[in-house]
View 1 (cartoon, rainbow, N blue to C red):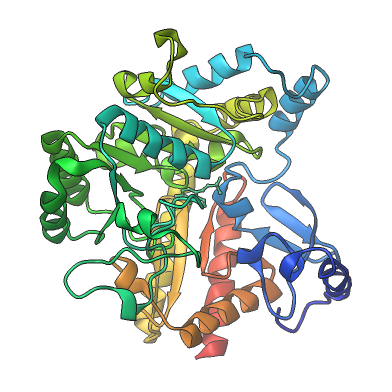
View 2: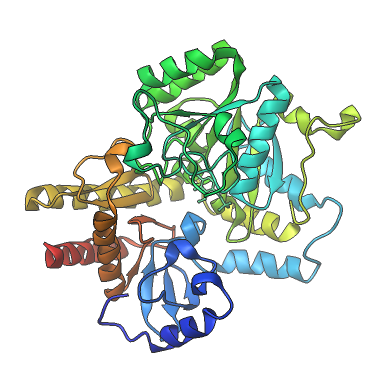
Length: 436
Ligand code: PLP
């Protein structure tokens, strides 16, 4: 991390941690050189590190804290539940209340199953699609992150020499991915409907599903064009494949999630992050006839859905309050602050001749240094040296008291005020000016 902050305690903690954890932490994506900072506590929109430095937290635990830290209503509800038990091997009423709250928001959420992470939600979505259609192939979009299961990991971060001549290639993310996995994933370009359809038409009725995140963070956080999503919808309807929206990060964009935001209806949706109110969660929601693959009433479900801590009453209780506090007004207010951050920064960077841009939608944003226009994974891609420039910018923000993810990604919580946004804009300009 940059100069200007005293980080002595964090440095000592890092030295200690290296003996136990690979690279000193399980939170590898937040690693910063020479060491990350360690958090002591958080309240509302702010966190404090182990040395007492305060930051406006615009990382919000990887976009999962829609109300910031230690929201009093969530604490109160969870504390009451803690005293009544944290998890049981049977269902609780909180699971019904939580599923009803989600179902009320989006017409396509006809049935819902709860898991512990977004990774699991995607894993179950792919299993459901295969069981429902009886087909094996999965299509996903180049550069999109859907958690860490084998199939979802294909082509998350391909380097240009592996991009493929005519169509995106299936490229492993983790070393050691089995060839069988790569052979069963078809990779599509983002926001290029014509090319995507030509690839999809070739695999036609062998395809179980098309998995897409409409605002993919690792593929540049440029929103999908509505006609791209509609084109994928129409293809799926024609071919019998299922359309799966990964809304784990993007559900926050509208009261009813991305189906409301883009006006396109998926068959299945993967949910996570904000719907847990700060506790681990994942959920799969969708068409009743598809979700019936998990239904034990049939005698033997086609797919077993489960998890030791799935639908635990702590996550259910916290999530229910978080959803209750995120009504249409709060969504609109938080999105408007996000619009202001992106618009003001983009205008200023253009006027200042700085080659950079901020992408995103609603309360999600991503800074791209060295790129003035980003449409998809390839137009967002930068080399290692340029990635370091972005990481330096993120460090420069941290020394000014603003915390975002080292890739330039961030989000707003409802705890953020217009004054916080003014301060973030001023700090970003100052950091960029110092670098140019
Ligand atoms: N899908 C998307 C779009 C995500 O952004 C993430 C996490 O960042 C996941 C899935 C995985 O969620 P989790 O980290 O809860 O496993």
